[in-house]
Image (cartoon, rainbow, N blue to C red; front, side, top):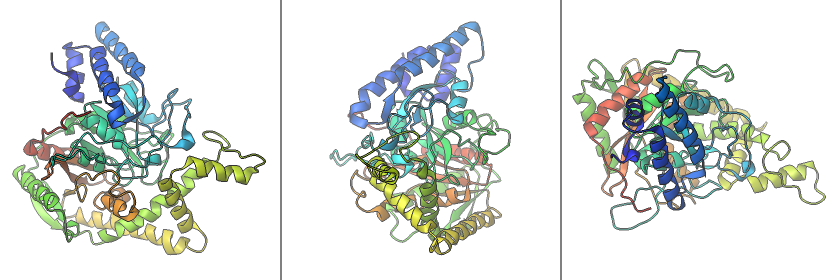
Length: 495
């Protein structure tokens, strides 16, 4: 029998529906992989094998009765621990929320359960989704399943903030996982671990029940082995939600049915500002290969300009921390989560002690930056200016899309780096997001697909950015790259 953990979403869904194997057999196989890898990879904060089995039994019972199984029928998935899950601890990887068990389910996770998916567990991440390497989690670093081919066994970053999601999918602990993307947190980890991931248009997936980082940027999306699996899962996750005031009131397209790798008549823009001095040679080569693949798929390649690109990262690291400082003010030790109450302390002392103990260093750094740029003397100088820059960046994309249908760029400036290599240098860490942040600021759909391996044997990703609401175009270009890149590498098992 096929090793069921080598199958992706489409293969599991179709195999269960046909009766080639049961949903319970699938859940048991993945539960075993999760348990065996936890000590080495630390991808999960909480494993929920019983939830995976419960959903699988329900799917098998439906099949026995001849009832429809749903878009994700029989597929067990990992849930990033930023999504509220009823009765299961939800921490955002922070000590301040340790032990918090929601009495409600996030809209996205509920949609996935309604579609027939089951939950293997809650996945580790950078604390409050703040980070690019999964080194800021209170529950310890996630270790990438990949290793360099130089014979060394240095632990590598799985990317962030959705590092638990990327490591779990890449290591075959889950066929797919949810991620969230604020400034690249689906795309960069997908690139680092050789999987696919799409950030849909802002508002396509409900933010209700997701622990907030930066509300005008946060967007949920799927991470999976290939483009088709992402399309299937995104269909299940997306849709209007009256509980989220930023939710798009639009029908969900049939993205899987619309998949086509034929890009005849499409124009793909190559932004000249992304060709940076000193660019990693392997990343540049993979980008050139991607251009050739899209040409082969029938696309016309055009040169485009995004002139305000160099201001995107500075603007992002003003806007996102500003929103974070506002969103994280709710963690005060009064209503839920951690409470640190020193003897004889007053209310202000309790606030200070709780936040000092509960928030990690990176979260504190961003809260301080955000509070600073929102303060009376600096609001106009920093925050207002950053919002104006954001408008200019969105306008750059709008102008570029008069010349092209899609934009192709690298996902990240390098392949995965070693844990600890950048953690002492926040600016170097923030530069990881240089190619991902512009699409986030503009709220555009963007996807990373694996393009090949670098000279160290580590995956590299290519990013496709589309017009608002054109997830189909992004997925189709991803499929065109995927079918030509023929990426089949997976990490050699050492865990």
